[in-house]
Length: 133
Image 1 (cartoon, rainbow, N blue to C red):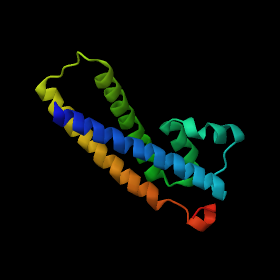
Image 2 (cartoon, rainbow, N blue to C red):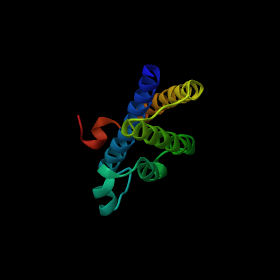
Image 3 (tube, one colour):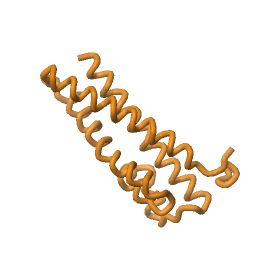
Image 4 (cartoon, rainbow, N blue to C red):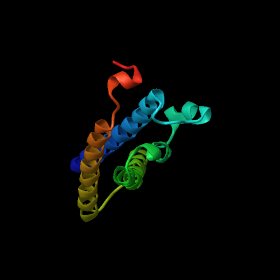
């Protein structure tokens, strides 16, 4: 079961990293004037779901990265739900064959998230544009 927990944890951490990177990118683009958000959107950005943040970013990114982020959002949600399920149900058990398949899926999601994380970093504005250093 340790392999399952480790794979789930890494998929969750990398998924969260993508979500936070996308949110930070939206903030930076909004600060630099590249992205226009309403006052309500700006106030809600710290709590916005990944799906909402992806929609905010849509006007500023090409369709390929947007589609990949959008597809990833569903996988990320699956990881979060599985993590909550495993964490909150003490009597949880899984058949070994099912565990192996889920471990492979978590590893795929982790790799997908790592690629998206790098792609999001490549989209960052120059530091002088946003006034950050």
